[in-house]
Length: 88
Image (spheres, one colour):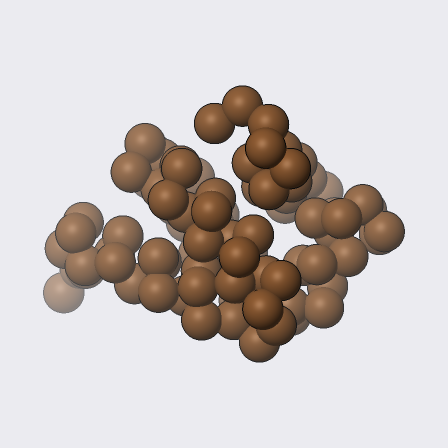
């Protein structure tokens, strides 16, 4: 049974704001609020996969301390842009 679109977006929002470290709660929740509703299927699948990554790794990727894995590169750049007040 597949997940209803509304339930999926709700789950992704919850996973975005209930992280291991507060900084990632704030960063990912801001991104989710700005972008989730407009994402296509492939983008949602990629974002869901990103949410399975370790918070310490995510934080280093988003802040540019460590390069993100290639598959997440564009997504991490978008998250960092939204987190720093860039275009939504």
